[in-house]
Image (cartoon, rainbow, N blue to C red; front, side, top):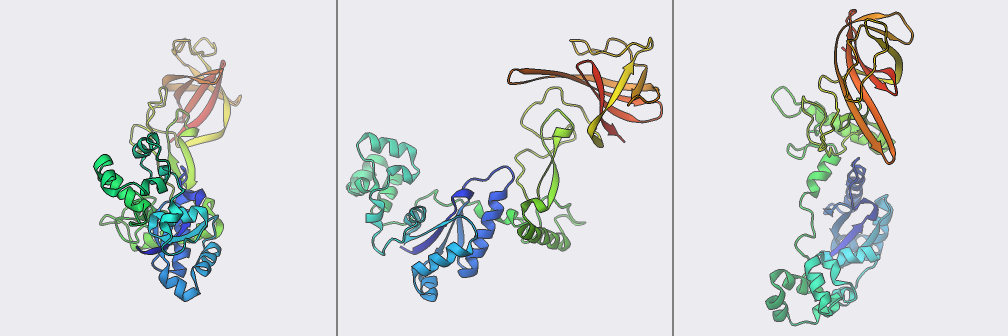
Amino acid sequence: MERLVVVWCPELLEEGPRGEEARRFARVVARAAELCPWTHPVRLGVCALPARGPARFFGGEEAVAARLAVAVGEQATIGVADGLFAAVLAARAELIVPPGGTADFLAPWSVATLARPDLAVTLQRLGITTLGQLAALPAASVSDRFGADAALCHAVARGESGELPGLRDRGIERRLRVARGEDPDRGDAPPSPFQPGFFGGASEADARAARSIVRVQERLGIEAVLIGRLRGGRDPAGQSVLVPWGSPDPDATPSPSGPASGAPWPGRLPPPAPTEVLQVPRRAELVDTEGNAMVVSGRGLLAAPIDRLSVDGGPWEEVAAWAGPWPVTERWWSVRRRRARLQVVTTDGVARLLCSERGRWWVEALYD
């Protein structure tokens, strides 16, 4: 079995919605590769490198671990052992397991570390709770009773094999290429934030821009470069968000019918989307032909046709057309909120999105 050094970054094992963990881990792998070019990611938050060459060059495995701890720039623990499975556990325990000592090192660990929940439950019901107890069973009996995969686990527990299927994330290289600002399908081309080139794909200029953005983020922080993204919601202001460049998109690609989201979002406005969402809504008044204030009934209907609109106490403007209303009823814990939105076009050609709540009207957004 190959002797391996493993870097374990507990804060980067799970990727959050902003994708910061993948970008940070990409830098961990790059910095570890400066010490050993054969560094390879195992899964998010875990990377490995062969121990033999770096140990000879730096003067021992302890020296390699010490240099890596300084170089990676993250909260990380380093471990060394024979085989990837034992090396990952050694990194979690921050230990250097002596050559040939894998079986003894693994013996006290729970069978749950094999990441085989069904097998672990079955073994525990039989009183086999540790890898040492599993290793003590006859190999033929384990294979006959529990199957081929259990036989592989048995070989790992005995220190005869160094790796289990499923230990490596086969898609981690692709995720890290995206995190570095590269297109995983086209070499060093950038990911989706850039438009395709004339002949499809992306240009070399886009690739250079992507690499430059990554360098800016490394120097100034992840939040230094932000891009707009659509997400689910009913409010125009809530359907767009600024996220760090390179963040994964948990939603589907937006369609012409509205922002992407797995939720149905009843009451969401139909397209087109407003071109300008006001940070501070403006007070508005709507009246019918008799001068009565417009109200939206409990059934989500207007009490009468709209005649005029006034914004911020300004002059009255005649309404040429309108669409809606779109009522929305939301509940946040015990607080119930009822609103209705209306698209209004006045005779001067200005199109506005209005919102009614508690008997008052507000201008929320403008259309081209």
